[in-house]
Image (cartoon, rainbow, N blue to C red):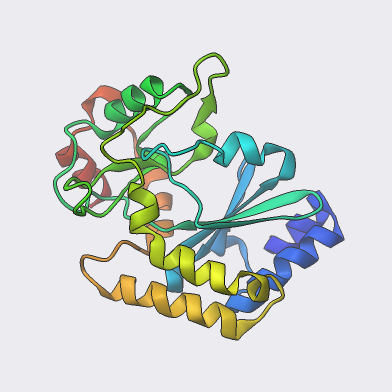
Length: 246
């Protein structure tokens, strides 16, 4: 089904029009089935040429999905907008494979870290994590949760760990994309292709760099993963993960 037809049928013409302007800016007005993935609570659009994922969800669910504070293990949006019935978030497209040395058991590691930081981990699995690029702040290719529906706030214990060694990691890594979107955001929301092209240029530089942060082609990898039998959660080592995604 066409993405905009789906949004209109579910959320109304006003929200479909708002989404159409953003997609118009990026030249994605006619999104067919193979370019977006519907979900139970959020829907993902893949801007492959600029290594970016757009997530659309009901406005009332936005806080549950994206307001996780400064937790480096949960992927943070680089920009967002709120419409009448929906919210839209831009997310950097990350590699589904480690980009260098990583932790021994990425899935188990994330279960441990998000629990320590006051979140409920519902269903962290190989299909809903990705990896940051190593940096001066963190020499590891740190795993992060990219499916925000698999975690929830713990209202009794909901604060990030203070003085985390990776505090501000994502803001630093994603600074060029945050800046490019911030400078052009209102124009992008109005369908301005020149504004979108400025953001695309920053993204293409990252995609062309072997050590760049952004990655594309994850849509094919995601579809590939969904067709394979998953081993037990504890068995995911970095080697197993690389083999599963090879």
